[in-house]
Length: 476
Image 1 (spheres, one colour):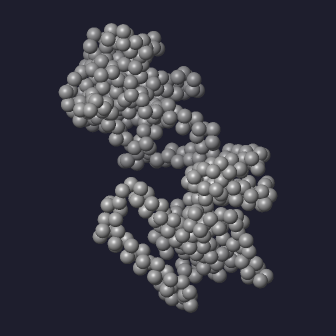
Image 2 (cartoon, helix red, strand yellow; image 1 turned 45 degrees about the vertical axis):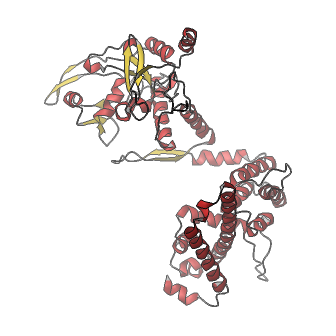
Image 3 (cartoon, helix red, strand yellow; image 1 turned 90 degrees about the vertical axis):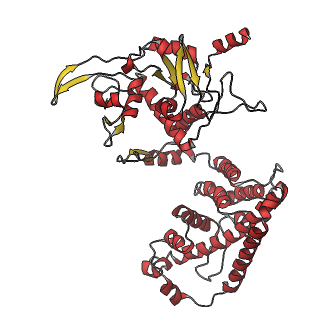
């Protein structure tokens, strides 16, 4: 790479100003660190500093976008050997950008898309620069108003309407969006961020291209996909592209499960009376995984799915009785190449049917009947009593919860409403690991928080049932 650069370098018109700018930036950074300028200022000063730094970054980003645009132009020759990317030993422009700037592939691709959106065209006859496709966007970029995020937020929705919408109409819509970015929009709102600019641009794209949904839908239908990868020791990867309405339905399921609700009487409070919220250190991605797991469980038990061999789709898990008793060893889920833990098997069996199979050297000696499944009448009664997942602050509704045997069935616990409580998939799966404890007191569930949440370790009655909460209010 360095040898190739040496062969093509000539008069570098930007070398001196860029070196001067780099040195100034180093000096500012060093001074800020030595004087702790960011830490010593008040909030207003810090906000001004962040804004000024961002504008400086946008100006530098504008220069980078133009440079990437020139690399794109020099790499568009039909003859691959005549392309800049080939001269420098790269497959394409994003790879060259990654090599030169040390950014990731996603950032490199975004730089290329932004460059194509705002770079001026070059006349094939005279070689002079012509107007960019969106002159207003380019002007905002060179003024430091828009960076990569803002450029793509405005240009991509409008570019998607071509060729159905005339170029002039797209440029006019971009000018209005740029005015919003500058804080000069029709409504007089403050300068809009990239997320709001995308909303404005999408609204204009829909208004200008009222028939655009149909071709977009045809493309989405053709590209829809969902694949389950090969199981690995760390999990099973999945990837795909959902139709917009399918993604919206999945998002609705996530929202229903992840909505922050706290409905727990006698919540532990801080010294100033502020309620102490239970700690949930799951990432949003982990929460969405758990919501999907719950949704799959609800779907499988709904009775609405097609049958397999005359029965509802059933996840079959096998494990040795000795391993269950010891709490060690491995279990195996049908259709999964990787083994699962005994804890996972117990979680699945707790809210499903357990069928005992006795074998001798591989020969099946006896098959027991399926047992310990709460029926629909018991589930309705438990849902009426508990209201939702009984762990404080969870808020997952009864419809999405599983029923947990408080006293394990293997230890003699009955499949009775006095021994069943509602738990969401996450709290059911990891109940022992996260420190919460559940017990029944004369048919009423009580929970005890872990020590980090409630140092008193008191057992507390829990419910989100409206009728039970109303009774509590009347008693007080």
